[in-house]
Image (cartoon, rainbow over all chains, first blue to last red; front, side, top):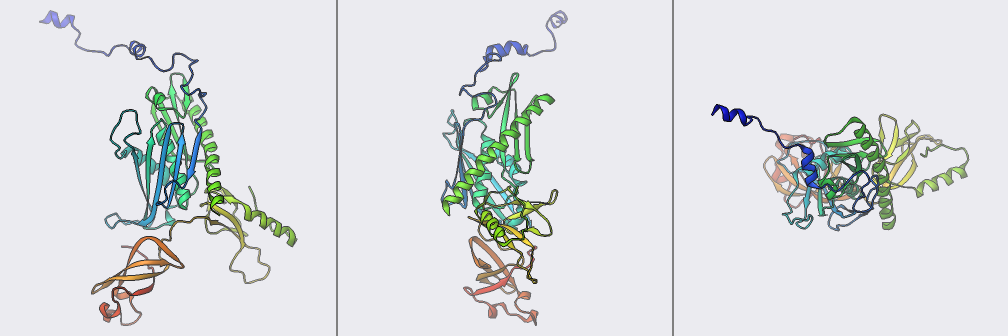
Length: 256
Length: 163
């Protein structure tokens, strides 16, 4: 008994990570891999955004970034429910849901609680809540197709929809994410890249005020990498902001 | 960034204003620098950190003369954004509303708000008329049932709405 336990170690270790990685076959072979959609590492997917996608809503927007397709509709401001705690400022009620056919594996399109609260956090700093006291604005985001970087697209699209609804805002909110794959930083990742990432970095900001409303980092990051990712994201955010402003102006001019 | 400068010549002024009229802005765009001569009006706000006026809604940028002009050579201006699509009217303390009485109780009446100022509401808003707010004198002798009937249209002032 005693001899046996001496030969068999009492502790256990996972097999070395290098072996596992070789078996997994990452999507990138070495430094000079090409992204599946022929984009550069620092190149975003083409963005298409339009307001007024839903007639019944007070405001709405549709966004299509590559394969990621999102519709956000805004309702209200309407009277807050009696059961809610009293507050003299307005409230945002965010809800993010996925359609059953949005992902490769057909799932049930239920509410995504984590995205809902992240969306709320990203937007609440940018909306002038004092302009609609004691009332609630409902924000419903529906992901029609999930093609990666879903949350940043939802956030940007929601702020466009809020602007379309005429809700007073300090600034538009634009959001961009970056994935860390090995040594490389990849902007606006697709689902395949996201599933293989070592870490993700997402920033939501108000481009013309240069203020950040939300920052999410997962995985292991060095300070220099974070710095690089932030520079990339903020630059992309300000460019996305320009696209969104053009979209709003076109829509406003068309209705006149 | 465009800062409005009050110019001497009338023609130049007109030209400038026409130019301003054309400008479409979106939330977060800079409208000017706040000063005693230029303040933020509707659809605009001042960032207290740098005194810059930003737009808060989508619309056209308008610079108008300050409405409270007692003297003729008024140089005060207000920059505002005339929204192409503002959100529905929301009653807030101090607004004058038109409401329809829905339920009359011994100490209060419920009403559905139909208009806030000159605008009709898009969503449903409810309010209550308390017994002590019905008239200025003999407020404890008010009989709510003699004062209101369901269906009455009333014009009312929204009071401080602390529950």
